[in-house]
Length: 136
Image 1 (cartoon, one colour):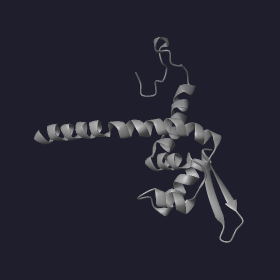
Image 2: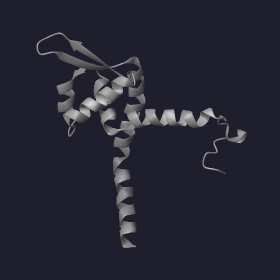
Image 3: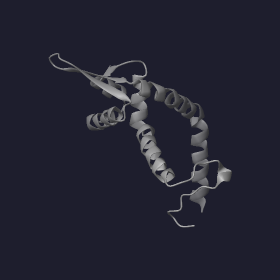
């Protein structure tokens, strides 16, 4: 089997053909956006309604202004967040989830709740792994 071999057997029930590889790349790019920690936090904070930039920055411990800007731009580019500028002095800018973003908030919240509920087990497993591997 060559590295570029992408045909999948019919027994797996997965699609066959040349489009499969490209589809995987597309899905991977979406998952990398919605799977990074800052995007997840922004989506979770925006699920309750629009927020201003500085409000988000205060609520997300440890995020720099540049990283928040990049995260919001990426979410806006992907159609998950809208940016509304109000003509006040100084200008007021609100960020809000789109319908697409609100749909994503549901599995993001479920994943966050799962991680919170299982954090002690995961930390225990990490400690056990590190202890086993430090001995050898």
